[in-house]
Length: 390
Image 1 (tube, rainbow, N blue to C red):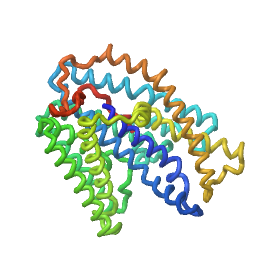
Image 2: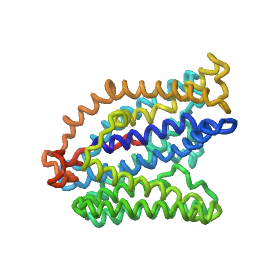
Image 3: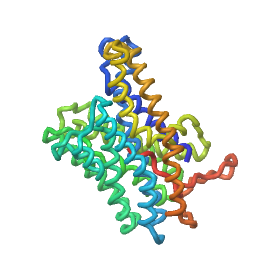
């Protein structure tokens, strides 16, 4: 689905820009336009929320369309393993090599590596281990979703699945409210604090099937999600950060609701007008590898660049130095991700068709175009790949 590939590309790019600028540098000392830009990039972390909504939507759709078929679990887990594990383990091996070689400023210890190998990177702090390579936390959340959600979809009715997805959304919000009331960080990485993005995406997939892709209903859902998102942000502004309810708990719900609305609108517009953005589709294609490797590339740059060019050691107040870091580190990450996708990931992806072929029956949901529309086929959701897990 090219429209969702474009959204996936946007999600990865905003995270890349976030770690290239707003997460690493202060805007102090910059002129007006560069200062506004750097401050704006500080919101790039929300790209992960978009990834979660996309993943919840696509994975739930795949599971719903195949839940009555034989080999349900085998096909799903083999295909997910071939998509995710080679790159994931490859990046962990690279992280080990760079850490042992002293080539990055933030090396990872064996305790963190061990926990990451079993997808517990998002709860290492609860086990007394610092989160030493941050991007791995979202992969842990995705894997926890993959572990439990297929059984829910398989065992429950469509209504029951919708209730379970709604319960996930409410549970995560409740955990954030509790965390805020107790003085903990609601912007934490634990699965129970962030799973509502996946839950909202799952609700979209269920609604698309329950209402038989009725465009009016889906536009109403997109509008309701947008209004609900605005309401969450408004409550946060009215009550401020001192309120347990508004101390970030609803803020994250607002972002997830906005992205749920965006995904729905993109599907509806894309199926009618065949929207294509080749550059964004390219970044969507390499987004998984790019997401996983980009922070290593920036850390590698931060380690060696000041030794080669001492005047690049401190970019505070110097926008040009920031741009150089982003350009070099980002280009290296894009190059690695592109080569990885073509020469490392593709052989594993081809194995999916041999070891776990998609059902010939299809059964995918289609967003059909009206008869008067241009001759562009509907969008088939059967067998669509998940977005780059983040």
